[in-house]
Image: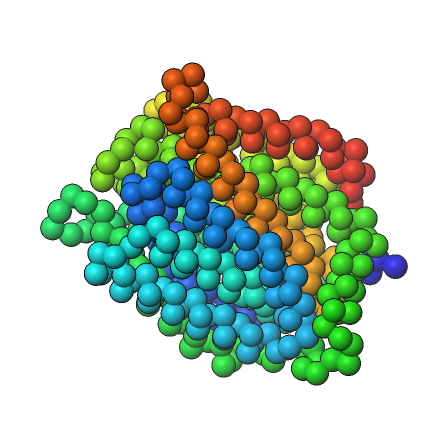
Length: 422
């Protein structure tokens, strides 16, 4: 029997931010996400300028495979053990990887295998970090505040996605020469871990038993069965999968897009500007999601946002000037974040607390699928780049993905039209 979803109208942003624990965690995540955004900009630009689309594909594959293999394990662990302790371990591991890539870049030793290794280890750690982090947000608030708390958490990531790439672009541009200076962005990422590590001891201990009686495999199977028996959760996961697999690769392919228009060392400024446009759109999408999730029918909102993402990516693929590209990136960021944040908030609000880690892990399988889709797109572009018939290959691949997303929304429309927040 499906548990009733709490009424999100009872929660307020002021009420959430008045909670010291939630406010501290929210602010620490703000700084951490800012560093992560600068790190992603630096590592992707470093990769594409040295190895092209094939390098981007290798990074995506290294990150995506662990996500696919370990998400369910990570989510199950976050429901069985102290989430605060698990989160502390994953953050410490991510910090070590940030230090490693910083040292390598300072010494000028950043081959593709090292970039892929760092991304791969980050993928392993994120499989445990993300469900624990998301469930901790729930632990910090009351049941009726879960939907708004998840939206506000998403707003943090969206806000930092505006300034993170801009800051990353500035850091890459600093230095005595015109070449990009990724080591400065990596250094900032290292220091961005400090507030979150300081905040961890003040987080609540998980309400989940530390020594559950049921075996680990039984707990994992219970999470899969829980989702399988709930039609609303299955619909939300299908929409999320479409958006992540066919829509979100546009962001990973942006450095390839930049290479088509402005290659060489100076392209990092153009790339940072486009990523900031995506971040600004993400911020707008998060704000809209917080305002509309309790007022619009959820299915119509998800269908409109997903279709808007597909159309925005089509516009981006056809853009030949910076202004149109920036507008397209902004719209794609807004629609993608609106769809993902609303979908994730509904998944968390529609799940029982002792199942939320596993439900979150199942939803995060789509991140692994996104990385694999991006890897396939990158390798395809690399193969098509040598053909005069397809040009760089970027436009053909991006258009196919966007059309696939639109077709998927049409196929799911009968379900989405009947979907309601209960």
